Amino acid sequence: MDMQPFVFRQEGRVVGIRAAAPADGVAEEVNRFALRPLAREEFAVFTLDLCNNLIDRHHSRFPEAELETVNRLAPGRPLMERHDLTGSLPRGTFFRSQLHRDGGTVSVRPDVYVLRTRENDDFILNIEGGVYRDTSIGFAFRTPECSVCTKDLRTCSHVPGRSYGDHACHYVMREVLEVIEGSVVPSGSQGTRFIAQQRALAPEEALHAARREYHRPIELWSRGFWAEE
Ligand SMILES: [Zn+2]
Image (cartoon, rainbow, N blue to C red; front, side):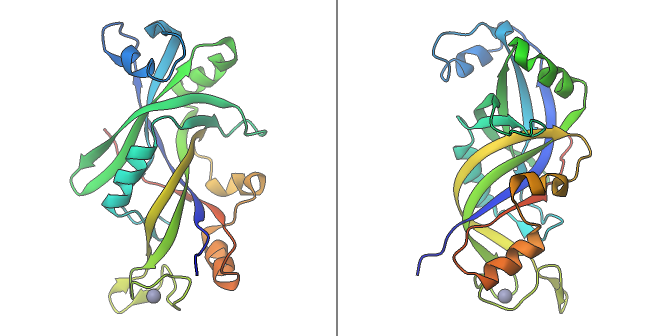
């Protein structure tokens, strides 16, 4: 029986702003997505730290192979402004992505371009000024694998966050299917603040609901880890 995928949201950080330098080669990469050639001063570029291989505060974890999938799927996806309550206007486009390694931490770091239109002026300024520093990625995956027994967590009785012997149960997100979008949100905002607007559930509720109702796709927010450059 084929189960519906989970639709998740994981949060990260804006980690870099690339100053406009005409000869940095970025324009060529951006122009693979533009319908007319853009000059370098027509757009701003930001680097986001979207997700990584650490266990997050909601007891979920990406294995590195799935981060490679996220990394591959990110280019071409839209950047949204979560602050916009309509939540429907893209502000930018991810145009490339790389895996960033820092010790044992692996994270997905895409670059996004935002057109310097009048409508985007405030958005860009809010990022440059550090007001919008948190990011999140919306994605879908198929299987939450229990770290204790390796079964689909919806079919076993282990509880994420609870200790079994010296092992704290978490779930490994397997079979990433899709990267839906990335968002920039105000610094310090809790993911839960947006849950009502996004019709998403808190992770514990979401898992509970998934166990109750096996076939329903669920949405939730979780916060990632900020890896400093
Ligand atoms: Zn289990």
